[in-house]
Image (cartoon, helix red, strand yellow):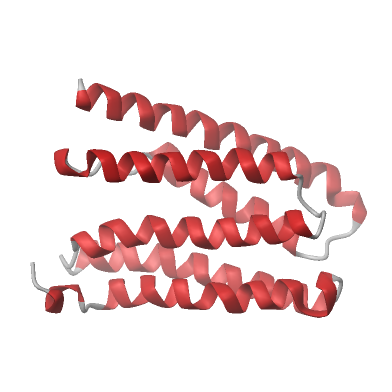
Length: 182
């Protein structure tokens, strides 16, 4: 596959997602992170980043423009976006560090595993993995938005379920990789 084959709309959306993340982080931290307007702007930015993830995959499949570059970079861009938001929220003491660390360790571990087993073919994202990504996006979004305090408990319970699904799907991914390797 030539470099020219990598020049397509789905891959451009993935690269755009990576370029947009620093702007989202800037909005998250603007005015010390306490400005409701900037938190809403940050939420909108991260939402649009997540939305491009939805569209780049659909476009790549519908146009038959799936590339090795996109297959590798797409999940990396997802992890950069969610990781940036989570670390930013933890720095601001809005999200517990234990949640951020648990999710990022899983995400980094799966990424390393993907690279290790890529010669045997990519392990496709499961329905659980797609649910995990959606829940992480919504869960983190609930921490970015300036919501009323009465929503803290539902938000925290949702994040607890997100962590459980994240870890469960991570274990499943490792099990599939070990089965494939063995």
